[in-house]
Length: 463
Ligand code: ADP
Ligand code: MG
Image: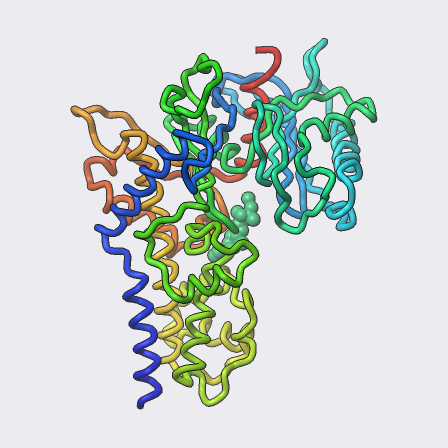
């Protein structure tokens, strides 16, 4: 019928606009490399901030002793303690506790929030068991994962640029978050010092490197997306400080803000961006990360409902609600392997209140999920290729056997199998067999926790 043909035309046009042929991915990777150079050359030189993290030493595996970590970046925060045993022994013991932040503290005062955190820390420190104390005469040391935008001023200090994710504590903005935490810690006489301030991407890089010395970069694919990697310090023109002894510096790319005319953007992406909390920002993130993929699918379905009566004469009202279709639901539909696509049918009914869908319609919904996930996955692979290119690791140099590992973390990568396999096969395709043999991707869970403790160790005041 005419309706079906109109719906198929919308689908087909969307599919064409989302196309990521290998040549286009190479252009995206090249653009990423170019922007990386620009961001490293000068402050504000690119949409890629390429933030200097002050992490110039990654864990080697030799770290020894008791270290703490604090992970703050959502409604829950975690405190963590690890006993590191040095070479071969690695993590001897690990204990952690998750605490939810009382909502009134998320919008109160800086002192209120950090007093609460310090008190929670003190309670946790009080549970140190036998043989789990800092060496005599030594202060406890802590790595602080603070996953909000921070202008870092040293490895253990940085000012908060702005809050996100439901936090809004006006008097903390432009303050040194480590200074604020330290004030609260000292107030209650807790003997503890913050020796590293990082974000989840850098924690993942550190956690990955601890287990595998070939790890050179980390990528987060979760609610949002970001990447960090190890740069040669002399290749950072905007760095005017002393060159670190290691000769290296970890760069927090903030790659979610990457943008390029080569990105395959559609009218649906433009509308999503315009209606978002941060229009014009985080364009790469808005086409590849977990917060947005489901909503892109919803927007195309809505258009098919409005302009081709895809779901009948009435446009399903639920379909008009932003973010009603979450990425985990999209992924469940995409992975439906039942012959009659029962999962797709049930999700459409339960989430969108659309019942009596035909198999033909369910197949279209699944095809849509595939188009959106595939575009995101392939562009993520192109981003990784861009980083490898910047490091000169996208080719094999005169028979060199050097290995490169990229540590990955985040719920999207971990749970969305179709996304993950598409990303990994695309990276192989981009690299070619010979180079692909030297490059691998490894899941590195919980970097934001243990990674911070490891960075506290590798930046200890006692080294
Ligand atoms: P965060 O990025 O907020 O720190 P996670 O790394 O746990 O947290 O990622 C959570 C995100 O991962 C969710 O917002 C969601 O988009 C995505 N996600 C979680 N589970 C799935 C799933 N089963 N399929 C697809 N995406 C998922
Ligand atoms: Mg996370």
